[in-house]
Amino acid sequence: MGGNPAGWANELLTIPMVSGFAWSLTAGDLLLVVGLVCLFFEVVKSTQTGRSSVVEHMLSTLVFVVFLVEFLLVGAAASSVFFILMMMAIFDVVAGFTVSITSAGRDVTMG
Image (cartoon, rainbow, N blue to C red; front, side, top):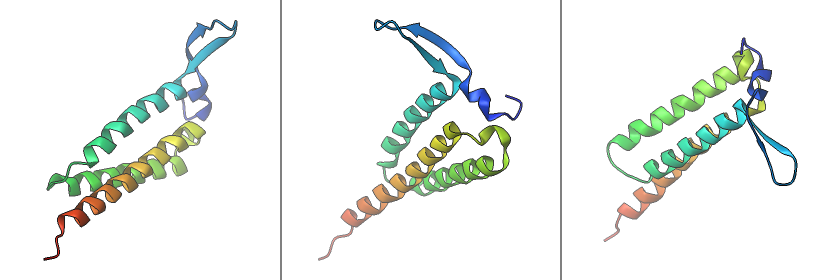
């Protein structure tokens, strides 16, 4: 994309619809769909507790920090597509910590 955020608007596929209009899938749209699929698997994975969950939370936080730095400093990342991906990364971090805290609260028993 050469550092230009407009590259996310490049059409990858155009499908004619029954209504007579054409639906175009852009590179940004495809990236958002891939991001949503990855977010689904991350949220499902965050429901598992264990020793590796701390490492998973650290990696999710690192991914969000990288997204934030790129959004602020890289020209091609200054787009709404990248911003939505960054928001998905912070939702992953918050969901992971929330699930871990909730499940840890259930593990504590008062006797």
